[in-house]
Image (cartoon, rainbow, N blue to C red; front, side):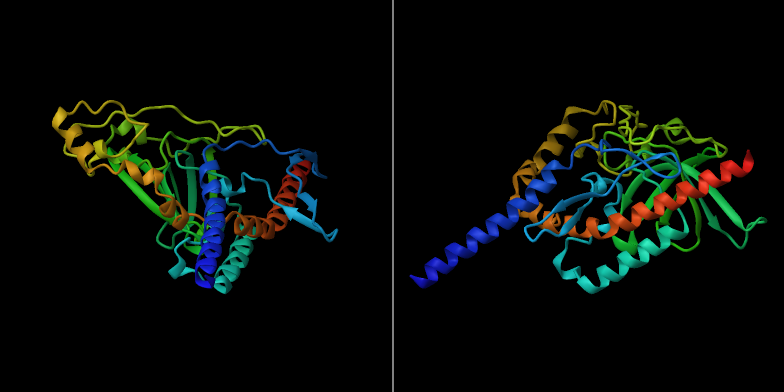
Length: 305
């Protein structure tokens, strides 16, 4: 009887922990910026720290919910065999220190970016590359993103480590999202979908506005392709115009039950309580860095006048 009661209690606790994680994964569908706005000393709008009181009357800092979309690299790797709380804490400190040196703006897969890195072999000791972000991944100091551009009719891709000390500047020329989380299919698409001028000027955007989603659907070149794109649920690709046998084979190898696999989602997410603690830890420092940047910009504009 004691064993049966223990197993029942254990299962209930495991179910509660799982549904908290699963609820977070289901809410990560859209990105909007609609926090309460206040004016800082520089005369620009900024997102204030959200504070609530706990049972003991202490003030608890709560980060905005969109932080998990803007700063996904602050969340650790959900694989339990790779978790180390001390290492993760030290990495977050190093990441914040690096962000105090250079500005790492908000960007998503599909954004047009320009990255300047130190290059000892370049005549001016710097190299700048402009391209579209086709993939983003990694966690902590191992966060990375890939930029793609077509230069002289040749596709060029560069993988940048986000917190690499060689990076001197990261600019977002056009902030937007695409219909898919990964744009690797641009490798098999027509060149015009990946061609951007190296002297492209940044587009102005209102603060705290909704990040636009580009509904563009690209057209792929005829087969052969680097991957079997018909087997992936791609929303940003036009009709592939393949024979029916390709779709029949894709249906046979598909795994539609994975979206109902609760344990699979459980292993791929971080608990909501842990996410709140991590973002509350970094939120105040990120806000202070943003305020200092705005003050420097304001002083620079005043000096110009």
